[in-house]
Length: 297
Image 1 (cartoon, one colour):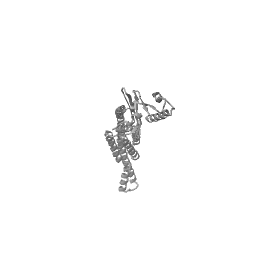
Image 2 (tube, helix red, strand yellow):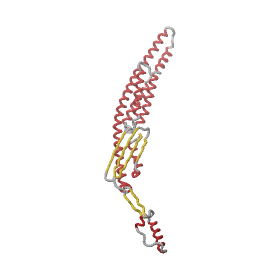
Image 3 (cartoon, helix red, strand yellow):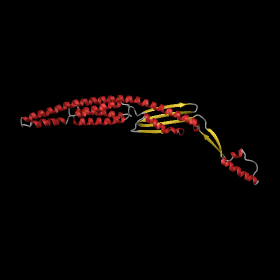
Image 4 (tube, one colour):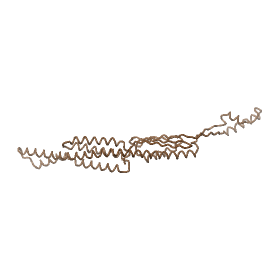
């Protein structure tokens, strides 16, 4: 299947407790390169996010950002240092017994002692129930965003496939035209050789067997039937890859290298009118395909 490696998706969800947003950008890359930005309150999702992304994306650079804005006010907690309080009370008892101080310890006294009381501000996300709800919501949003990204990449992949199919059909037609021109060129070479031998017969008596063998060898050097057959096999393989369910970008890239190698060999061996022109046109089409395949997952 042809999917584009580029895409974008953004989803948000708001309720009375928080606002969550997921943004995903995907661009070309040789491998799967995932860049995550997840708030500390949702850090538990990070490992799971990597697994989720791998289900939808085989390769490409993926930047996923999850943002969180809490709507609930922070919770204020006051903690009393009991160990310090007991030690302070014992010290005061000893001081009263010696007549150094009078009276009891009041709340105001404790407020003036920073060691006695700790005032803590806990964000709502520290609440286990709310934290669990935020993690579940974040997970659902990420799945939605990945699904939208996948749909976009498939849609762009359809355009890529249409463009690649057009170039593939063009280059396949060019190779067939090259094969036809090369066959005519090979026959022309054979005829020129035979005509030349006919001219030489008026002067010398050549060995007809050796002459026939040399004509065959010379013509065989320009025979491109094997290269043409392999190119047709590559075209058939291409069709099989783009119809399969698996990502095929890297395989198509390799297949294009093989197609280009066959065209180069054909160009080196084939002889005939317009062969060079057709070879240049075929290589230009293959280069256009190679550029487009860089965008395929």
